[in-house]
Length: 197
Ligand code: MN
Image 1 (spheres, rainbow, N blue to C red):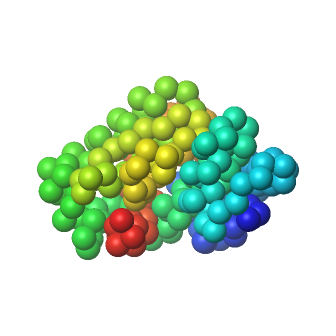
Image 2: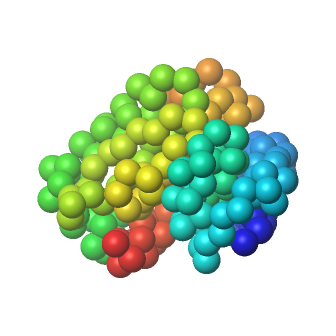
């Protein structure tokens, strides 16, 4: 299969003022696109195939190196765009709300742990809400890594590479993460991922 750059699920200015159209023009139009282009170059000679992007990540992880980094970043970024919504943020509803209360004690505690996970991911990476062995937890991954290769189901993600927040928040990663939870988190997407787990 070939990698493709998916259209954003909203207009590039739809998340302003929390995430700017300028950020999307670089982050989606240049960074994500570069992973697609480079990933396809490397896939052409890799001799691996899969019938979904998730399955391709698992195959690429067996090869590692630049192939995995580019394929992994394609999955991670597509999942990140879908993890945000113009109507997102704040306390969730539905099954994810009940599970967050059960597994984190409260939404406020979840928020604290998610933000702390992103703040303490040293260098480039991702902070995830995952379902593992029937329980929600926070997971941190470095660079292009994801829960897909660790046997956990991704539910929601925030990109903590500097390119994700530097134009809007400069060095203030904690403020970016707090804004993600308060203003952008797409709980409908999280609920839909629970049903796939
Ligand atoms: Mn990124």
